Length: 272
Length: 263
Image (tube, rainbow over all chains, first blue to last red; front, side, top):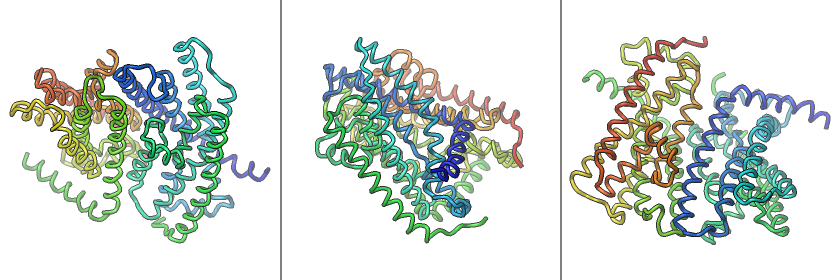
């Protein structure tokens, strides 16, 4: 345990400092995300108006606002850019330096990122939850914050982060084969955006598709924690969904290890 | 003029050679943007399984607006993608020197240097949607509406380019302005849907301040209804011209403020 603290905490600190140094980029992304939420908010408001009712497939407009903003925040919180990082390191050869260090490669990436995740938790998630609860209070007239659901949300978000990290690791290893990382990044974000339900709640999708997507790892990445927070799941379903998240974390851990073992053999550092 | 065209051809040829060299990369880029678009369309499709119309527009009409909005976006993406690099790192690394010592206008050189074929994803989807949605959208087709809306497309693309020039220019003072380009560019989301769904302040904002509404909704509205050519099409031309003049002015100011960096 002491060893872990000694060798990995510096990675975490570096991650935090990175976010502080590039804070303007970070703020840009946050504002970009909020703009997107507002476009979606207006769109949904028009959908609700066209539908002529207060509820749309079990979602009220208040639910929808919570869903939109919280799933966007959750996606940002668990966002992993490790695929870009690995890709860059493979491209410029600096991955060899990382491989030489007496630390676990995956963990060193993960701790660097946990630094930024922690910062996001403080500056992004907490104000967002606060804002949403104030909104919910104003909209419905009673306090609906549920500590139990919030804690379960955090637990589920941790699992979501692990899944997101592993999925990204797999995407990052594609850099061993393809060089257009930027294109892969767009591809990854749009696939995850759609399949994770952060674009449109999975509950709204046609039944067959919905069931498929709910079992895929992407749903575990933001849909599950957000639905838990909103209290849309009963006790039994919460246990089931959390179990599914754990299963996916383990499976993706295995998959990323497997790809890594295959890819490392192909590593050929160009230049230096 | 002839000289500029010749230089542009030479630079574009270089780009095409690079694409042929990295064919897999080109494919990944184009396929990525295609899938990104497919997701956006799936979203509209799913919404319309639940409601018959949105803010008074039918499914086909919304698709038409969406498709139209992607064409200027793709055109700008195809031709002026290098401005992103100016904002993100060309200025910061001091690489902008290169453009200043060559006997070509720096703005032209920056833009001509990249020919971003990834944009094919947006252009193909935009055109395909127009073709798919046109029969059912109840278009107001006359020679007049078709001609005017085709004229509007390059001007609408110029709105994108001008906004990128303005935000990229800020890098001359700030060293790096990638995040500002990202933020302003991201507002193009507003152009995909009818502005009538937004509240009044937002509507004014996307019409007159960051005028993305003119890249999609207004020109499409003109083809859909045939009304108000002066605002819907004239507005595109006027706003994009004004914005372009402002952007060139800021760009030139920025170049005189540019200090080379790095070593």
